[in-house]
Image (cartoon, rainbow, N blue to C red; front, side):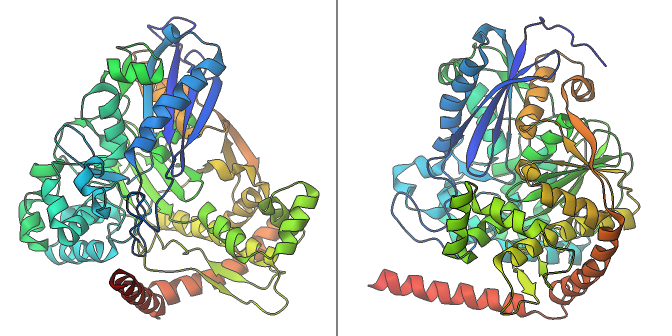
Length: 567
């Protein structure tokens, strides 16, 4: 264990995790990583998927937007609240670091002003930040993928052969072609992870994580002008006009806390502000999982699978492999599932009858807990179902957000707990598919570590261990991303020489918390074989029905919105 350097014994850092619906701040002791207090502030506007707040204008399918002022409110509310709850003096805070969902990205003026805050653009959807789960740029991503494959672009292999509709270039191309006026007004196309750091210290530095995984920055280069012009002549100058910016290494100091941000947060002006980061990737040091082969699955509304390795390999369907994308000196791999907790929430909100809600209230639990308890009573395969976990599309390994969810085997005897368990199992099958892709490409997975809000569902954890037939370690903190940010803040403040040294002291993990049961694992092998058949049948082109249904939905929705406008 490495002792902190250049830090008094009472030094603390602040980590702020900006999630999908809220932001969380933690106060962490530098000497041992103890979380002294935390506070959560929900976004007033949440994830806007139906209409704009300013005008009520309906949004098309697969849109998901946010409001930047909600993020600043987290700094104004959650940070002072956490500091007050900790009992720590503000003068003991030596640094602050933040992480964000990725790819959440917004168009701004040259000074960072979001375009949605300009009165004349408040009614324009493309002026708002596009949340990670904004998947309406799928056609643009497909064009980028097709052109890159046709031209033999070397960077494409680093992303498993396909980039996602969630990423910077696909969303920017959608902006250009659907609202060229807003595109022309855009001076900076900014990851929210970097925008919030810009607001904290006045310095705009692109973090190496977002730039590599979401911005197609490989070997120091973005896609070139010729490639971008072939997509659309007006897109040729996108990189130099709106994207290019100095790159900051993870754990580096981006700047000093400004007077304005000090007033928001109640923290001392001038303390270190770390380079921004992505919520999943920053969790790896929080779980002290920085050895090659330790795959960290951050399970929440979606799941992101991240891992460091000593070697570069081409892994089909990965979200990316980036040199230094998680920690300096190692290759960082990323994969993911677009919907996990969102799927369970959707099912409870839309498909569970009133009697279950009444029974949950009688027991004093929520509906998720009731369904989990009922599902836990079943044997593997008892429900007779198998599901595909594509209700929010497929991020890995198919990289196709026009795919949709599926449950096979339902009868008139099927109960809500049956379907709920099948959905839990489907997410575990998705993780097993990702692990297989890594190992088939020669990148061994030596340990599976789970973090995120879904840790509280012990049935899901045991199912994952059984399906993957390997022990499951769990992070030792309920605030993984925020703790990871606090670790990076300690490095940026000079308390530790690098991120691994800080993680060795401040990180938390419980090894092999869940162990697979051999009988259940064997039974799940049979169910997983059925999942694989469905996965390839619907996801690899044998049956294109999901894409055809998606196209019909988009067409019908457009007609409905057109009729509303004409009324």
